[in-house]
Image 1 (cartoon, protein in one colour):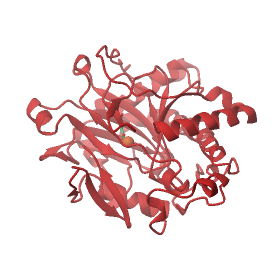
Image 2 (cartoon, rainbow, N blue to C red):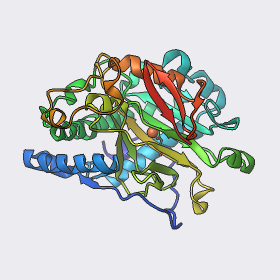
Image 3 (spheres, rainbow, N blue to C red):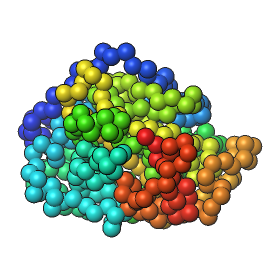
Image 4 (cartoon, rainbow, N blue to C red):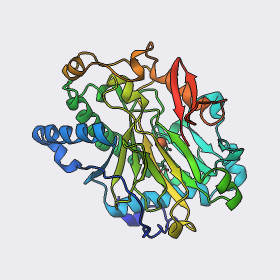
Length: 363
Ligand SMILES: O=C(O)CCC(=O)C(=O)O
Ligand SMILES: [Fe+2]
């Protein structure tokens, strides 16, 4: 659509990049423009497999969305926070404990972080079937663009990566794609998320943690890289490392469901968000995501016909229990997240059992 025909909305001014000397994770960069041919995909599948066996996070570049389309999505992402009043937000807030689904608003202060300190995060979650939920008035003219953005993430990014993940296991290329149907029932969603600064006393009590260390629930998580730091991954050396911003890149990681489907071959990397570096503290931290999950009726069982799994065997949490259906797994996690009673272990990691499977939370 020519830019002149798009609804006019306030422009979002991104923060300048940080100049702080931070210890950044050294992540592979996957050039998605090479995925158009079978040879290119075979090559990228090896790169993705290597990235997954080392860091578990990687960048994607040349995905096909231009810098100005990217900037427009951040303009749209800011609307549900800056252009919608508190009453309307409240009326569109979902009770996750009841629904087990992230749709609509998550207001600030729902989740417990540490020592009585609650989160300062607002989310606006849009199921990829954009018409399946009510939206704030300000967002309605933007729904065609959000729909196009969801489809872009689904077909161009997630499906392409799922093919590479299948190839890495020497499975038929479309094995995981066939479990991620755009039109099926499921919670694959676009998420807009804004983190607000905290008072110094709360910052100290919560040890600067804004979002606790966790593994994602779904299969492939797509994070649209943005300049404000804070995201860290728990590296193989047992240290938290910062994720560096790359302009118009995607930061990709996988979650629990990919661990289960791949028999532990693709393990989720624990990540968290802490207070941004000192030179960015006065800027809001606005994020745009596409969280993909297998369709609700997919059984999260290891794909044991994979020659790679036959060679290396199964590992991880998926082998100790009867695999849940995706819909059951996500409802259990979403309902419990941030509000359930957690058991603190000796190492300080908090644990709970959901659907018979161990779930850990890190600070
Ligand atoms: O805000 C970020 O950079 C990461 C958020 C995240 O990990 C999540 O929402 O699962
Ligand atoms: Fe996450």
